[in-house]
Length: 452
Image (cartoon, rainbow, N blue to C red):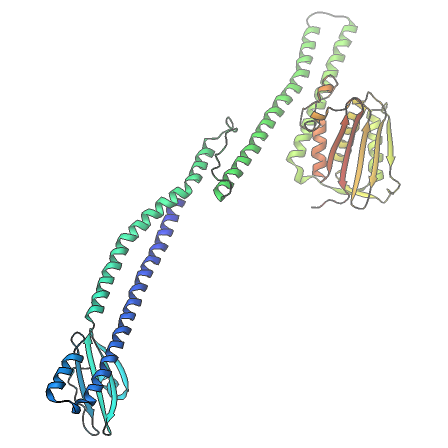
């Protein structure tokens, strides 16, 4: 069952029950009001009858008959009865009353009773030391006709109103959920080929508008992710295909005829150079993939800051002995100073960043400074190389993106994005400040203790 159908049924059932309850309440209140009004009329008739009987001795027969016709029998089917109660005798009633009513009339000073549609009221009083009872009964013709009319009217209104409520409930629920239906249709029509399509937001302030806005934000993120994935695959294919094409072409040309030893050596050197470039690219891709997919399984441990820097310097100088690195360590850092990291990944990050600094500054001195306080450590890598254009700093950490002034310098464009991802996994921040032909400063801020 659709949500609109369920909502319509619930709304219609609840509204119908309220509607019926309101009609019943009106009828019950009207019935009680009629009873109270007619009861007051009977009380007044009892008082008039009582005075008439008490003063009848002062009137002659003609006057008594005239007064009786004038003041009594004004209610439909009205009857009056005077009963004298005498001890030791059975009270005789003219009217046909039940034993319970008779007992109630004789015991109570005032009493109200009903027999079918006939209603009555009695009052006990004394004359000459004897108890007397006056009983007046009548039929509330006008009141019962009004109640009958009200009952028919309420039933008619309910019979007409409930279908209208059900139809209105379905129309209202369909119209209320129409934007959701359109949102679903728009979402179903989207695919990887038309992720640029967006859902129309009719009212951004209501819940449905906010849902549509959330969907649009999701589609925007998906579009960016797909575009990033496409660019990644395109660039990865390019970076892998070029060295392979060079290797295959060089081997084919060399093998096309017999060559001298020097020519073979030159060809092998070209193949080795391209193979090394390919090896670096593939290793970076594998490491980036591993970091992205297994970030939650990476193990971290507290290590000595000084020991970490020493291992990095030893490993880097083993690979690049010609590099000139100036290491500056804050005096506050002692052999007991520790930081929580994955040592292999962190050293790999430092190697990538320092290698870029050395490479893009034409092997000039690169400064590595380290500062630390109780909550975080700050590492700065400063070079005096070619710098990065201001407009490209925000893009430089995207995979395979290379600055426009670094196209002719050896590199794959993966290293910096890999470093940024590793720093993020360490709950740190990597920032870049650069100026063309003045150099680049990369700052890493890491918490000394990670929060898991």
